[in-house]
Image 1 (cartoon, rainbow, N blue to C red):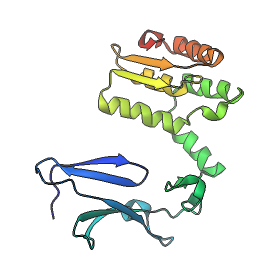
Image 2: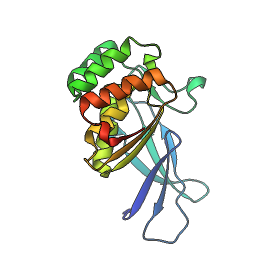
Image 3: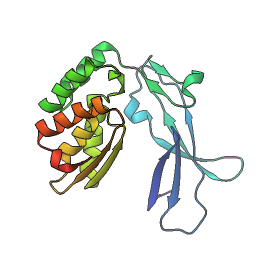
Image 4: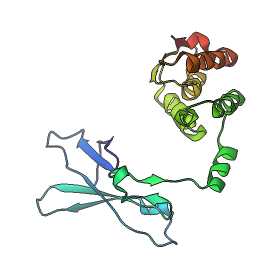
Length: 194
């Protein structure tokens, strides 16, 4: 069955909702399930949506979320229905070597690592994802609530167009001073609205 004009909206971990943009019919109810893979099954080819009918005659899209990693935690009560993939030190080193982290962000990351509460800082790959989303969307106005030392907001400000504006909200004056210092060093303080 062809699915033209479908919007997929990410909702609550692994649940997806979609509506047809060409039909006035009720939205299709979707569910998600997971399955185990053998060690030879590549994750990218296995995580494909599958359509089927359930007993209540509603169309369902079964999104098979899977991982061949032994570090996936899916049944721990503390995580609810979320799946967490832990990074080994070797994998994290690989990630840091291959992420496109501007020098100013690297300097901020190093300074933040010695501060109290440094676990609140996003990782370089998360900041790169945020920056990429800003670029893809062509965003000109962004807001960040909870700036800490400004790593993710600086990553966003670096990719905003010159006319772009970033509203950065932080309660802790000491952390915000670090963020302001790096906005100035990166030459993006004109994009920030205090």
